[in-house]
Image (cartoon, rainbow, N blue to C red):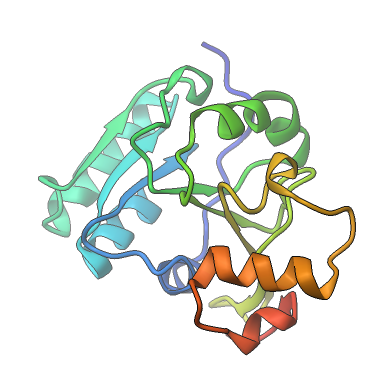
Length: 198
């Protein structure tokens, strides 16, 4: 197994915003691909009651992750796999979190996301957009150091190109987009792609 990318920690305030942006709850299963010290999985589970799976190739970081899970009392809700994320089946996931280089997503994960995720699965990325996918929300959030970070939220079955009905977002297309996402309830906030609240 080879390490494709170095682990870079996601700020805690950003992780807290991820739980809100993706509306994560107790019924969700959250996957973090390249989970590092486990903070995303542990904190998400602690805040929302969701189950979590962290995928990390570095055995030392797996040990740290498992200790964090015990420290925060979520060891029965989360697990950490010492694996290459290319080898992990994502079909169980209802939320996938990515803080990974653009070229890695494009070369190794894009087809996997399109083939393995169930319709309705939420994908949240930090800083890096999913190549070719259309975000439902793009949100700026200030981290602990005062730096504004960008989160992208995608939904399988809506965001990927195979789900698009038109090349341009006409009024009719946007109405269908909203209907598929929210049912018959209109959400004015979706009229603006860039949501800088946070």
